[in-house]
Length: 273
Image (cartoon, rainbow, N blue to C red; front, top):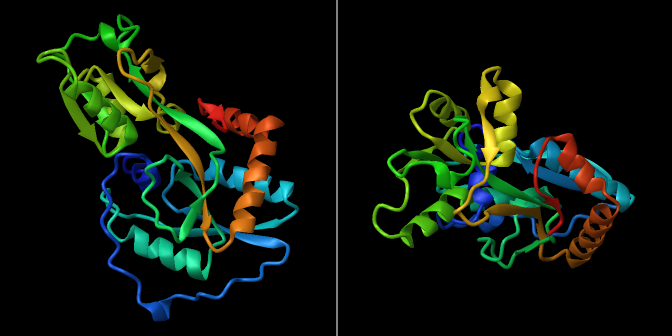
């Protein structure tokens, strides 16, 4: 990410604004279907925070289907409004990629009929993080203390929706941050009372900062739960592959493989869902 959560999560989380694709010149598109044989080309956003987890899931899916997984980085580094992303995605999925891993498979995912979404292989939450030991839940924080939110994320939109439904003076001032590390610094120095952040981003902060021991996840009440249902994207022309991936995901959820990968990376959440 690591601007907010790398663009992948900012983009694929519900609530992110999307610029309309300007369209890709037809001569740039290869509309033939690649005969892959016993392999698939799997692409990733090069800036995605969840890239290592998603790659392990892709390899597990490949193993389940007896397919060799060819890893292709893809692209990344887009602005938070998604400008340019849909054009690049269209090119990649037509010309190079069989599968694009690590997308939100929520009902309002902004993809055209040219693409099909798999079922989710993991549901990973946004969490509320604080450092003051006096706070056991978000509700313990005085309303005059500001909070940080991960910019353009589902977690931020979840907070905005909740705050708009509250009476005057019954919600917190929100400071949006594009960088979870900077937001963590402001929690630690007391500038903000806590932060709403995607849990893998918080896991990265804990792994990379020696001063992060004071940070802890607390009960987000009264906020409702917010989470990203993470899956993959395939071409709608390849319904067979999408069906096979769905079956493989079901099997990997059932046998505990996805749960073990979540644990490997220190991610909270659930397999499937």
